[in-house]
Length: 184
Image (tube, rainbow, N blue to C red):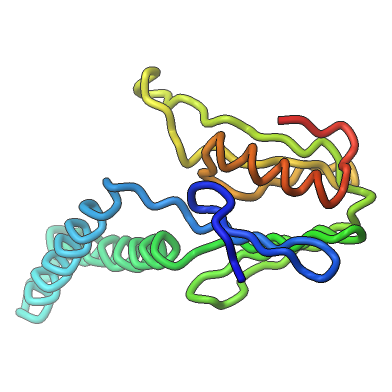
């Protein structure tokens, strides 16, 4: 049974280790931004579609409208992918004494799975969020993550994790396996 570890992070003890679920970060702004962009894109695509069915002379303005419509279609599909990730995306972490496995899912469908031998994982640490370059007083909360090294290559997971969630997650991971040179 999954128990809340801290914030969004839930965990459960398995036979040989632990399993954790870290949902994608959802902010209050995304709840307002998502529907507004969806309405705008749908209205613009409908408007562009109605303009394209009328006969137009072959001129530059018509071609620019077709290019704009193509850009709106691409933006719409990008937006839908972003919205699906925001609402249903999560990261699953399974750790036992022999392996660290990180799985990324959307709609419950496995997108990527990376497995690392536990004895090759080191330098497990929290990477705090950085400031947005436009507004130095504003933190980009989605930029935080947990980072580690495996086979001398850096890897990250748990994008957008808060400091308290990261501390609890790393502490729980260190109870299962003492990764060398790891800190908070």
